[in-house]
Image (tube, rainbow, N blue to C red; front, side, top):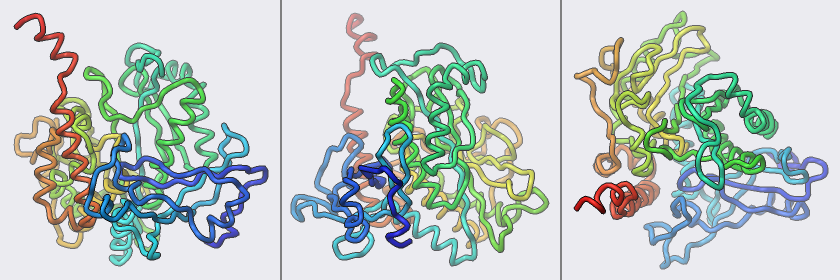
Length: 431
């Protein structure tokens, strides 16, 4: 794209330019329209520590960004056309890419991990289509609790009650260039799901970063707090991040043969099964994320696969040739989409390259499949498996892998050191 492709909509006075950080959180700066041309030419300076801070913005010495090297700058350049945010007149939003001061990719930019796998797929002759489904809660910002009560999954009455906020989320985010297909109430009070239309894999991940930020902004504008925290309430449904994949060659879905999964698709499934355990940390970056990985919760605990089966880890959707795809169901809504999609795509492409066959299909309850390979249900196990995985280090990149796992280890240490309110209530007066 040329600088002309980044011309501002009429009436724009401010541009919000952002990127996805270590956790896939949108971070950036607001730029006066009068300075936009210069940013398009020269980039916007940001600290490289953006890719080495945790979700609370805490910073620590990492192998690539640290006090010894002074946490140097990088430059951010726009890659999407600025679009007006309907709820904030005069403000346009734009997504960016990172470039080091040496004009090379930033090694700890999570986006690069997915770029490598998309390019690998292209070298194999495939274009990757990816779809994303994210669940989140709409809460009262004062109490941190839902304003409604009861489970009303797919309930159109509940949908109408939430339309004053979900309607703008669908229509106004769609107007920002993120194609929204549908929304529905989910399996808990205050919980909803919004589906983004499938698209090219890198664009799909960029859209997730932007989408989560725009949902939070719009929710705030309508008096709600939106959270993609994986398990905000111990006795309620967790927030999932389901991913859907198909590979295309010569404008044909390589996963479909008369609406059924092909041998290529089966190998993709086999590759996913092989790596699900050691890459689980990419789908759940915190101990909280693993709290939703429990039996009979519609979150998988093993590598089972099956056709149109929501108890398995890998659900196959068959039907029209263009709709046949593989759905992976274990990640939480707080996952970094770049690392998640990169690890999943790398796994599937390995399966194709090496002709990996999946295990026998699970046709019943995947939670009760005694022969199924388990995937981690706690952060400690997930970190240990990831630490032993040269494959995951290669997928993420050495520096990025180390920083991401350091963050995960810090989170485990922090959470394990806490005395919870439940412990206090349970034990204070009994011992």
